[in-house]
Image 1 (cartoon, rainbow, N blue to C red):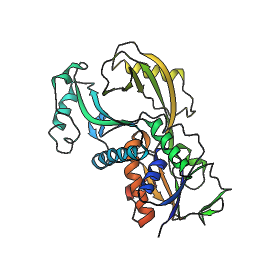
Image 2: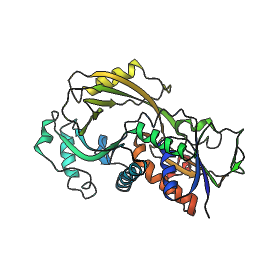
Image 3: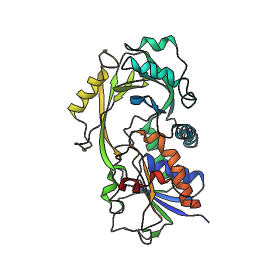
Image 4: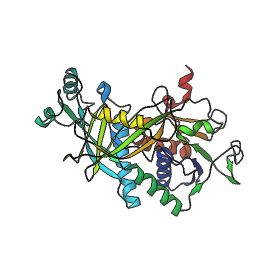
Length: 341
């Protein structure tokens, strides 16, 4: 029997869930206030590494491979272009880092992601560099084309869900009763009363678009900052992590911080042509939250994707769709009860 789901939130989490439900021919609506400022401005870089500790990201193997296949399938369905293969180059920041990197290259867990060493790697920085496979999602195109598709199929509702128009007991929203409701509101999670105890914290990130006379057009460079080539000698440079300022407006201080960090990548002059800011939803342990409400069992939260959202969202959306449709259990490690222990 087909179930009807209401998705609240049109960021990367909500949209990936909409695509997963579409692939399963399930009925749903997505409601969004049209003011998304995080998923749209994200750089959308996806790779399997946590460079700071030279470790794999959490659940890197399934999440990376599933996200890669997911975005390519959605790209074909929407007949648009937002998936771009990428080499991600880590510029080593200490004499110890290349030694650790070479050890990782002999580890079977890392081998699917790390690229073979080449003499080109030694050319970057005082300590050399290492490369991993990756890709980047043009977030603006992915979000806008997905919302356009939902609108064309009359599945998109532009509105704000409040206690006045939604009843969690009956799962009724504006006269329509749903079988499941998912709150995927990102940093706006605390604007609704149903998951107030879940520690989703707003973390501001700023991003620059610059002109840089650099012939490397297929490689993203990372060290203190990242430089992502987006075509035509334009690069996205970022980003910041700010906890005390959660306004969506970019700042001069943010721009100077990014440009200063970018000197660890290049001493070339960079011409700033744009600056944006967004608010990431983060949790204390930097892991996502995916769970049922303790009282309203068909009310779910899908949040806390942080800076890895474009890698995490497809797999987590698939898990959530299976919980809604097949009543499969959600991973206990993603339950917000973990913060109570």
